[in-house]
Amino acid sequence: ALDRWAKKFGPLYSMWLGNQLFVVVSDPNMVKDLVITNGAIFSSRKEMYMKSQIIFVRRGITATPYDDIW
Image 1: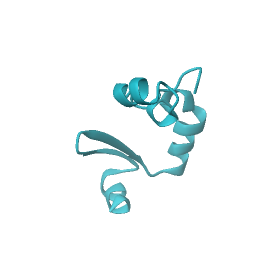
Image 2: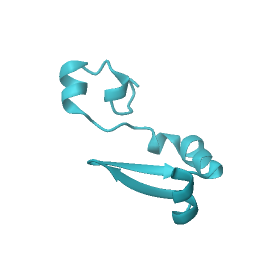
Image 3: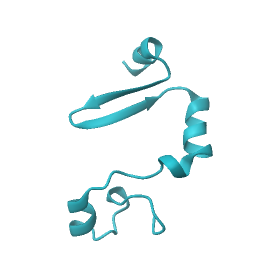
Image 4: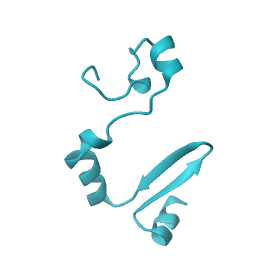
């Protein structure tokens, strides 16, 4: 399905799954530019206060935004 949508909508598109917005990048050069060239801009994770601050106390990388610690 993702390949069909890339052909229909182009190499960069987004979709909602529940209340979460996902961005799909299907062009390798675009991925390289986003992940390697501009990685610091796009490397953070969504803040999940309960999981990050209360449960893991900032020790869980999946729940912590990108910063000096991670």
